[in-house]
Structure formats: structure tokens, C-alpha cells
Amino acid sequence: MPQLNLPKNYPTCFRGQLPKLSYVWEKNHGEVRSPPRILHSHADVAELLLITRGTVNYTVGEHQYVVTEGDIIILNAGIMHDEDARLAANTTVLLIGLENVRLTGLPDNALIPADACPILTLGSSYAFVKDTMEMICQFLTEDRVHYAETCQHLTTGLVSLCAELYRRNAVPTAPAGKGVLLTNRIRDYIADHYQEEISLQSISTALHANAYYLSHVFKENTGYSPMQYAIRLRISKAQELLTYTNYSITQIAGMVGYDNISHFNVIFAKYIGMSPGKYRKMSANRDSKA
Image (cartoon, rainbow, N blue to C red; front, side, top):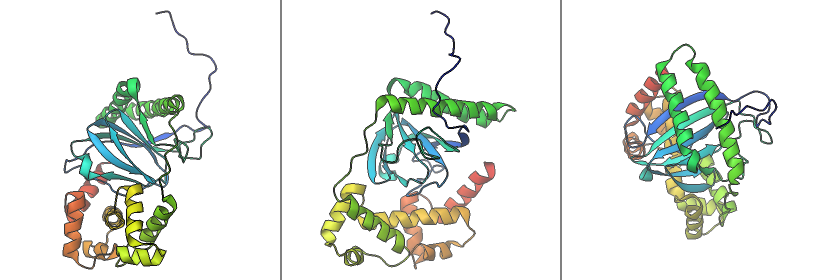
């Protein structure tokens, strides 16, 4: 191979300041230390989630996707996403959080257009992306003097590569399902009333829509019935409160719509795989090591 030289001038995908690595995590679904994090978003952090083993059902925004090894999920800041533990067991995900993302032609902290499909199949680039993300994990674990800087540069290259792969592959716009407007109205109603006693009939009455039709349309677009979605939202809010506040578990149960603490404990354990108390302790231990 002849000597190859870097051009003196070349286009960049960044607008000024380079993205900052916020965190990296290898998450093994099905393990106690990796409980699912459901129905949540990050206001100022974008994420890249690389599936390195197994299959997981992931909801991003209004759509649900089945992703498998070699796929990367691209999440803009502020987009609601949800991992479904029903398909997540024995799945490994490498996850990188990014701050100060400024890509040409996109809003701050956006990696792709808002209406674009967030799933990219990496193909021949999978091994390189996987090795790079694993290297970042390893270097941060070793915590040597210049490794943080090395990880930052690796992250910048990774974002640039993913932007180029996305551009080349021309991922189509996420499909618009039937009844998206009604689905959004249902989602908004649940978000406004999840702390109250809520039922399919109360949603139906409030939105002046047939309960059967309402439920059918919502599940077609989200993969969940309205009541399943309401439970997931409640548990998601409980996870936030357990992690970031000092409210008692009884107080948190009431704040997310459960008057019966025993019922709350059962539901939380069913969806997260552990009790609220254990989840709080695990979250505190993880944050103390960050």
C-alpha cells in the first residue's frame, strides 16, 4: 500500500465545539446490576447504544423497533425511549452519553434529524465501532493520567464516523403509523394524569373515543396497551425519584399513583427485577463510583 496522507483541508461535521463524552456503560440485560430503565429521556444528553449481543425491543419516540447485534440506536437529547425487558434478557448494549453535540445542519444535542429512523445497521463497520466503544470503557476503567483525554478524542472520532455512516446509508424517515394523532393525545393524557386513578374508560371518556378503538390504535403504534403504558410511566417516574431524591418509598409510591405500598413494591419488582429499596441502593452505589 502506498503512503496515504491526510488532506490539509477537509470538511467537518461539527459546528465549532466538539462533543463531550459524558458517560459510557456496558449494560448486560438480565443481570441484577443492569435493571431496565423504562420510559425516560435526557434533556441535554444524546446517546449511542450499540447492540453487541442478543435482541432487544426498543421504543424511540412514537415507534417501536426490534434491534439486534450490529445495530446502533441513535438517540437525540429529549427523545423519550424505553427498553422492553420482555426481549432484553441476555442482551448486551454498549452505551455512550454525549453532551455539547453540535452537528452541521442539526439542532444542539441532536445526532440525526428529528423525523429520521433512529436505527442504523453498521454492517462492515460494526467491528470497528464495537472495538472503539470497548476501548473507551477499558481506558476509563484503568483511570490513567491521559486516558480521559484519549477517550474524549476517540469519542469525537466515533461521532464523526456515525454521522458519515448515517449520511451514506440514507436511513429512511421513520414510518408514520395510523392514528398517530390519537396516540399522541392518549400519551399526553396519561402523562398528565398518571398520578391519579386512571382506567381505559376514563381515557376514553376524556378523549371522546371508543375504548376498544382507542386501545387498538395505541397498541399498534407503541406496542403497549394504554394501561401498560401508564404503568411503565409510573415506574419510570419512580426510578427517577428513587435515584435523585430522598423521599421515602411510601411517599414515592403515592407520588406516582399507588396508594398501596405493597402493590407498588410488587409492580416495581415485576418490571425492574428488584425491590424499590434495592434499586435505590444500587443507584446510589453506581453514582458514588461515577
